Length: 236
Image 1: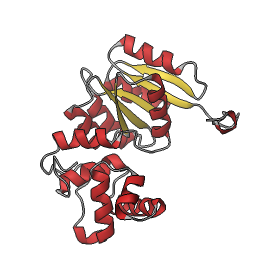
Image 2 (image 1 turned 45 degrees about the horizontal axis):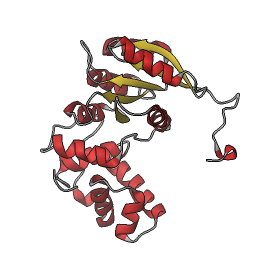
Image 3 (image 1 turned 60 degrees about the horizontal axis):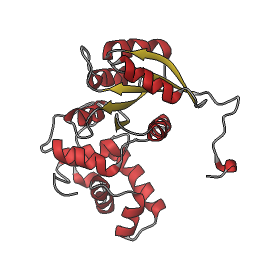
């Protein structure tokens, strides 16, 4: 990226306000040190458990909460569910020591906008925070489908953030094709090539699919695909 292409902070641009939630002080300090040199971010608070994270989020109104999903007391999944309900403008980026964990899928169901393993690079963390801040899902498609194909093997009860898929008649035949390919891990360019349609047409179909499924992003659309039976473990 050239210097002219780099996003520049202006006086009108507010730094991305980040709350760090992890029961290990050294992890919180490490995350804070990663964010400190970048003026695009400011750490507004640190929490040692889910209950404290929710309380501090209400007080400081961060844009993004970096949430460890394994914490004592109110865990990260329950805290994420509360934040999605009480502060929907506050977006959660979930963290886990393990890159395949049933709690990751639970966190996405609860309303997390993304997931990262704790061993990601600082650059990957910063990129994910920016992505989540824009309202997009920060989960690699193939990592997401591996998680879901491992842990989502049967329809689950409806959740507020990821309702059951509507009857197939509510989606067009082309939308069902796009949804299935999205759920098996293809990105927009790969879907475009497979169906021999333009990338912009793929984007339009995905926007329509999200609206009809009442899901927020690709992560929840993939979960809905597995829970509806559109795709099953081993399809990807």
